[in-house]
Structure formats: C-alpha cells, structure tokens
Image 1 (cartoon, one colour):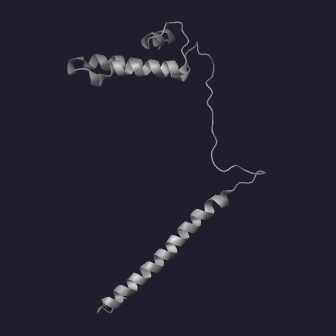
Image 2: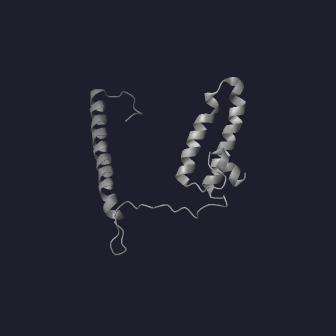
Image 3: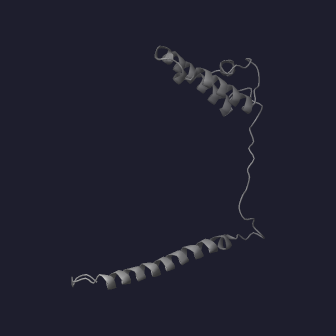
Length: 132
C-alpha cells in the first residue's frame, strides 16, 4: 500500500505527516464508521472490504514503513520493584515473607489434617485389617 493512499483512507492529506496518536484516533473513527457488524447483510461484504483496507492503512502507518515518517518512535520504560544497592539484589528479602507464609500454611494445614484424621479414626474404627 502506498503512503499517500493510506493517509487518504484515514482522512489525512496525501503529503501530511500525522503523528502516531493522530493515526490511532483516525483509525478508531474510520473503523467505527465502516465496521461490518454495523451494516445490514446485503451491505456487509462491501463494508468488510473497506474495513480491511482501513486496517491495512493503519498498520502501514503505525509500523513506520511509510517513507515520510518523522523518525523512530521512542517509548519510555518505567522500572518497578526493589532498587538495587551497590549491585546487590534483595531477592531474598522479597521472597522471605512469602516463603514463611507457605511453610506456615503447609505445617499448620498438616497438623490440622492429622488431627482430623485421628478424630475420624477414633470415632469410626475400621474393621478392615488392610486399612490403617
């Protein structure tokens, strides 16, 4: 697809240089206007082909393959988590509370299960010699 055709399909002037946000807004508007689900059955095929053309134009302009792009698109990376001090990580400090929670749950759950099993065995003794 040619860059000028893609721009015209999304409603821009042929030699314009729309930004990423302008391209996205124009795509949303055109996609809403020409979505095949909004048309009756007899017009659905035409709307579907127009929708595909609009989607192709959007992907062409968003991918940066258009020759008149303003340059590379930079994204901002936001780091989260515990900061490192002097090159050391604090993974052990992060994992310790979860490890204690898991071990405590397993230990207490095991004790409760053993008590419940013992109570049931005392209340209902088995006459089968092969069962505990």
